[in-house]
Amino acid sequence: EGDTTGSIVWSSSRVLGEFLVLNKAKLDFRSVVELGAGTGAVSKVAAQVGAMSVVATDQHVEALQKNPPEGVAVKQYCFGAPPPEWLK
Image (tube, rainbow, N blue to C red; front, side, top):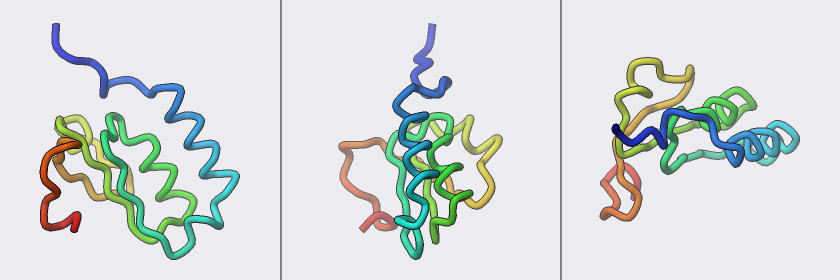
């Protein structure tokens, strides 16, 4: 069986999403990069509550690329690898 880590919405994603909704003013004029986005749930919430730009990253971006959240750029990146140019 393959790794299903990125195929479920973890409770921490729900908590962070709720925090973003309750504190959406903190995202005004901010850029968000979600490392290890998995389903992209947190990125989707960040975009919906008004972040200026949102990038969802994951080592395995296939699922995100098939159904990207509106207003969210999807980039492949494995946390811990040297940062790509777009992240610098």
